[in-house]
Image (tube, rainbow, N blue to C red; front, side, top):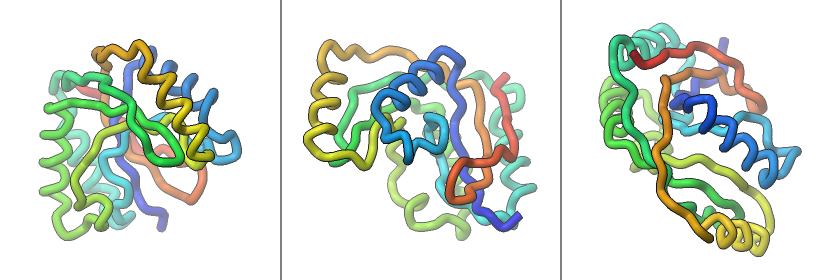
Length: 167
């Protein structure tokens, strides 16, 4: 397999369904090729497949799920995303990044801003309207993080590589 590897956090079923419904409603259908996701790494080399599996397993096996909170939505310019806060997940990502030193692309070396994109690549006015609607009555709430997953990126839908559940 020569495709790069993407690493994401997995949400509980209820949270995943909620994010999915929002994406179906607001993401341009022709561009909505992957499920709602929280990316930890965008592009790891395929040559480290075994190491990725080993590191994700070590971070989740017999480990309680990290607490996470849905925070305010924010503008992507031509889209909208929900900000996600999780000190525990941030610590996991930092350990993984340290383990992948020298293998990270610039996007993955930059500061991590955990989020779930709900809309992207629409007209700015449409994005502003959705952002206003999402902010109306917003209240922070807990999210359930159930595990970590690795995926093969092939330019369109991602192909599953491995899943590693907490606990």
